Length: 364
Ligand SMILES: Nc1ncnc2c1ncn2[C@@H]1O[C@H](COP(=O)(O)OP(=O)(O)OP(=O)(O)O)[C@@H](O)[C@H]1O
Ligand SMILES: [Mg+2]
Image (cartoon, rainbow, N blue to C red; front, top):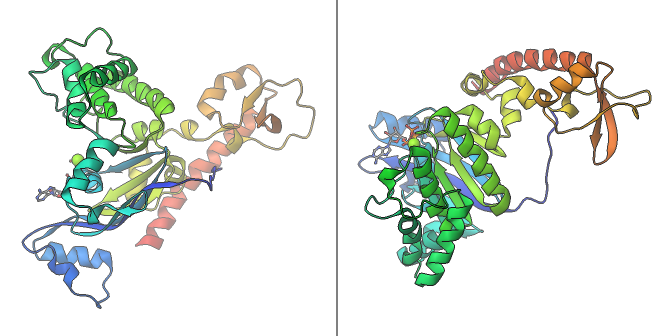
């Protein structure tokens, strides 16, 4: 698997060793300095005491302009972690750095200001105000921001256009379909022009077809706005479509962080492999992964970009059995043929199984 490294990525938000412990005396576990106990053992001890380590030593960075996806089974701590990022849930321990500044040291007033101006949130249950129209729902947080009425109207109109709700401004939520209601939720959170956008399973209440449409729209919006995004989902195929990087959680802890391709080809353990098991390799592997060096003249062959997925080149390949030239930055870097694709698929499929088995032993 070929991975594109970008060394110029700036960190927008950093979550460092964050714990959220529910129980009688959550702070008790962090009072004692000087004893050395592994996070996993500390979490076990909390559970034995009857406390719930909903987030246990969670660390990750979100880069400027990236979509960072959080996945894990129900109860693994996804919502808890994402709520800690805005302090909707107060972390018991750890650090949240926004543009390098510790969010946990902010006063309540500063925090409200940061949330209102820098953060947008979208939840699975759309959370619209039933007695307000679409336009009023969307403009509502702008009023809290203290914007004047003409600016509120203008901004609301802009995001209504962006999410494709033009013409429905005066409808009430009950008159809209689920997909339309979630568009309102999305527009409302975007109206404040947040730098950070948190989405907690925003599409999971929608049926598959609408869901796919909403994912496309979400990606289109992100191409325009380039927010720094944390997105929770249960659905690996959804993650595969939208994630730049993703994090898998289990029992409050981070199991693995990586690109979807890294997780698929190199899962940390069986738990991760289970999530990725149903993903067709043709959707993950790209022309650059399945090419071989070209030794002859490639000028007569049709060209594909090295980042095109195998899924997208299969039909071309069926028509041109002599192969396709693979280009990267305008230069031909190799050739894909039916044989090179089959060989690469067979190799990756085998690697996927053995990697999960071997990693299982290493991480155990
Ligand atoms: N207010 C609370 N009091 C006590 N326990 C809580 C509280 N909120 C969450 N928990 C517990 O923390 C754990 C993590 O919950 P969380 O909602 O973060 O999971 P999740 O991964 O978002 O699950 P889902 O996929 O079902 O939304 C669960 O065991 C949950 O019961
Ligand atoms: Mg949740």
